[in-house]
Image (tube, rainbow, N blue to C red; front, side, top):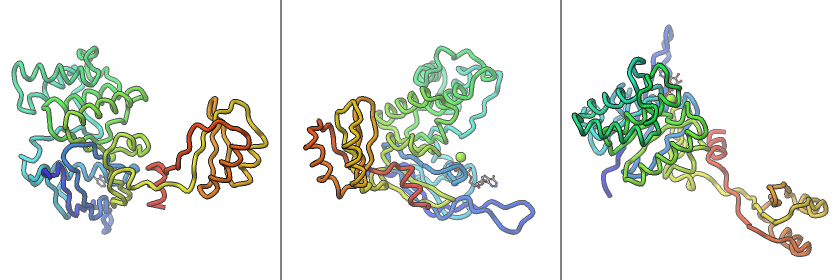
Length: 307
Ligand SMILES: Nc1ncnc2c1ncn2[C@@H]1O[C@H](COP(=O)(O)OP(=O)(O)O)[C@@H](O)[C@H]1O
Ligand SMILES: [Mg+2]
């Protein structure tokens, strides 16, 4: 096994509360590992401690306790950030600069110069869909455009590890889909992506692994399928255009539910009644399309874990 991209051991962060002796615990004894390669989703509601953890991970603020390593290098060491691209939660850029100037400036910060810096900046502006708007000043950019400029700036140094704090905030649904596609492409190119999001359901499908954070504590960590449970429910899809009241009645008698799904009908039934309902369907000569056990979503798993 290669060195993990991220290793966090017993991170805690306490912030002082003004005019009070008590301290607010933002991150509480957090340990996790993100392997090199793949997309790690650091998920949790607003205020869970995601941004605080990321700032400690980048060495911007010191942890109250604990330590972290990026590719094996302690984060207190400046060299730890050499292979990292970072998108802050609220990227700030001088308003009078154009998108292209901002990305080029970041190429310089990443140690690139001359033609190489220009080429990388151009490639990244294309990659994030800002090429046509590259001459627009930041003052005129929408929140979504600013986010794209931030993403291009994080990518410009061709980092091995991307740390993105709420990258989909400010993006519209199309922008979010483009972001998911871009993340998938970067992941395919062998990059490690560590991103935070409060949108559990949106990130579920793209993450290889997730760490779920609630009130500063890690409540679950692993592949989404390891965290979510199958429900004691089975979804049966049948081809049916008209509502069959008799069938609906019989299914309900077995504790199930019938709902229309476009041209089809979906029956949600308790797992232990599957064979009873199959018998009903056979007698009514219904055309069966699929039978699938239902799994809870990551959001439902989260509510189960913290509730
Ligand atoms: N600089 C700070 N000073 C005091 N409290 C802070 C500071 N930054 C964050 N917090 C508090 O720490 C908790 C976690 O915040 P944050 O890490 O921003 O969460 P998230 O990114 O998951 O929304 C919140 O209760 C927040 O109010
Ligand atoms: Mg945050």
